[in-house]
Length: 518
Image (cartoon, rainbow, N blue to C red; front, side, top):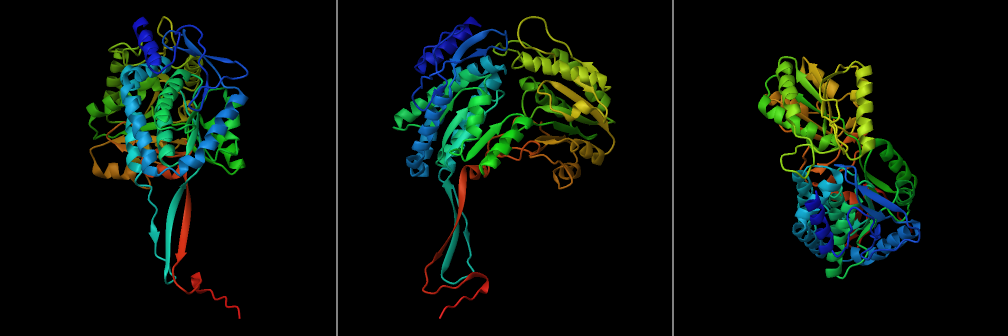
């Protein structure tokens, strides 16, 4: 661990920041390209979930610092929106290249502060890089269609304009990638942005902002990429209720997402909501079980069950249920749990002690409701916020299976017909990610049809987690309906305008309306 901390310290030093790991430091939690000294000093301690020890502390933004950040973003917007989109794309290209330089130490910092294993930490930074590459190409493709006018010598078309300041509120489980989903698109669309990261992962946000500062300085920019670290009850509330911020992109719980939606709608703002998931896999009787078991293990145990796309519910056809359960129960104890930065570890800790308590509270409720623990359910000895991944034999009336517990708990159900499995699959309030394992073309198509999965993401013969940035990411029902990253998700960061040009000498009206004045 000492070597890792030394690497992280050098990383911050390379970014121009002196960081005394393990003790208090004077880094500030608000930045517009230059760090802001708050009038009121309130410290936020970043804790290593592997051992429960402090990594460093951040001086959080107060409301005066927040105002400076918002003002800078607002003032930067007019010039940034008039910068040609391909030129904005070059700035994002530079950001992606800078992330390539710092991929290794930033990925290690993600794993240190959040607790995901190193390959996932590095993968998250690679996702940022991929998102920048995607956005660079998009900067030359912000297309609007031409429509045929019914009026002679008229041209009608659609165009898109930058929206303004975008507020990005991200969660701890993907402390940097989700920011990049939003920031790369917002930047090429001509928006400035203000990022409020999770209070569980402030150091990763500080590191990314330092990288953004380097890029802005090279391009003589200020106030495009901005950071404000502070409590949700004060800084977060200011952001979601700020009339100068036309769009809030929020990633988090369904309950908090409902509050964000109400606050933004109440001021006629917009919101992109990426909320809870209660994701499921259906394994048909004709499935490739070797493929299915491997996918189930990563989807259920990867990131210690702390992905919004983590597998929560597993529906097994009764003919293959015993052998799949046997394989899973045999595989679970062999999953190496420990320091996520060590080679060979497959599952790190939960993010904090509260998450551990939620895990065991859920297990108690599951037992009271008639669920049976098939394996796991304990807590490894030693420091840190570790739990054992747990498999539950569930029944259709198990209420806890309808809720999202952000922990490695997998509910296993049996079914007889595909229609029954789809009905159980769709019976929950969330609708993010879903999958079916089958060799039957008809079953796969049924799962993807109007009568199939009701989720925003539906897969065949791959798991529920690990989405690529080329497709729009998001879900339905209480998942919020938002879409980020690929496809046409960029449209959420712009405003649509329909334009009609009369290049003739007459003034015909649409729909044959006549209005002649003598």
